[in-house]
Image (cartoon, rainbow, N blue to C red; front, side, top):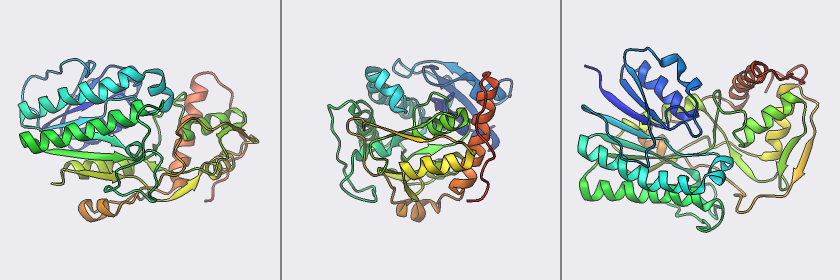
Length: 327
């Protein structure tokens, strides 16, 4: 009999790719989502599969799943600033009440649970690159605090259930991830730049553009999460790509790859926007024998094609020219 896994946030970008991974590995997948930011289009291809079931439910309400559960992956939460700034209270409730409900379910079912934390727990870091033993530099009452503190609470509650109740816990600190199934209106750098470039619009860069990020392709991220779940390490692990670049460099690279004639326009930097973001993945290399393998060039080319088709399917005209194919 197939082992059973519950994936929350299953209709979202990361959650839907995790559904694919666990179906491919032979698990029975129970996918749960309230569809506030996710889309059934992301998992439509799994409907009708004998080992896949979808539940329309909000994790801030009590979560019940009949029968045994072997694993829980808690990925429910708005993740884009555009989303969590629009839904600040719900974001806090998902990180607190939602996490409490799923940890209680894991305890009741004797299931192993992996919770999706974030690099945002480091805030605007004073340590660079960021390792798991860095406690962070976060403004708890700023606009971004609703997401940062929701995830910091999620980690604290998860470790409390591990220490007090012996629940098997895994904590993934996820850094910037990209790839197919990101929303056109996601609001994060890569989907925003890709849509603007493909539409022939100027690319919007906030601040000087010298703030840094690192970008991990979705297939690498899913593999890292899977390896963490199957490991015996209960504390936080950074999962991300340590290759760092400035936002301006990213914008210029996307213009080249799409063949766009777009220019870059600069706008004021949002409050508490981190100036640097780069994971130290020494622990992931040691404990999981994992590191990213997909280059930024290859990952972006796959993502560009997805967004090109998505925009054309919605009736938009693509204005980009001949793409630049070499890294």
